[in-house]
Length: 314
Image 1: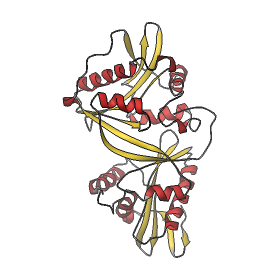
Image 2: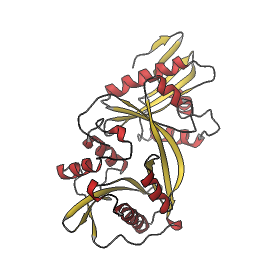
Image 3: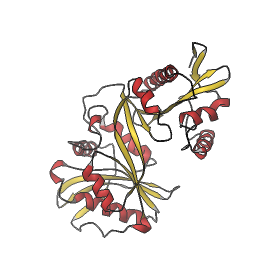
Image 4: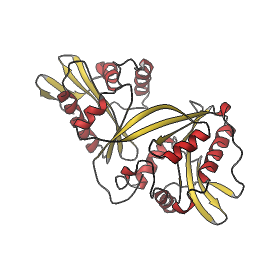
């Protein structure tokens, strides 16, 4: 990626010697909420080939990194942005130049959407993204429940949870799309992404395994589906997504899905369950609270669509 100069400012891909400083700024390292361990872990992951710094961008004056942003291309034709983060007294125009370059990078990589989750570690990033065309959508709560603090009986016996064999099958994709209808979780995402792209993202989060993906049935009827991921390194189960067809909502089935999830996590010997929810989705928030989930953190979701689609998704 070629560099450009704006008022003695150089914008370009981070050099290896600047990786640490760039990550520190992009992840909000100058605030008291900074996580030094996060930067160390990311540097180690890059050396092991588990993450790419191709989209790690810096603004430098001389040999000094004055601002940084990390645009990470992810499965499902979506890019995630961390930052921008700036040194004190660095003008907002520097951040805008970084965001513009990240949009170019994401487009070239084939992304249809850029997202950013802004938390307390970099509170200024939201305003900087908004100045560059990103739209603030909602606050997302990251919830967690410790298995030794919660328990649940098995779901109702008439419910059958059938493992998904092929997530690319048309029937499964159509089922997922149908569960997105009138969703209370980030409805602004409707029509932005294709369901197949969303499922590719879920698949990557699940470590490329559908071992814990299920469709839900009662008698001969298909009611919905639930997607779980078993993260063995952290000894957690992640509830990535669950959805019901519209006619089966408000029948208490959400609670049955959580009972199933808790029992799966206990069977796998996991320590905790984590999930995320749009704070505007009050029924889902109340359900999670009822089962003992607590908020671990909250982040503001910003979106910038890069390509429109006529297919409704979540």
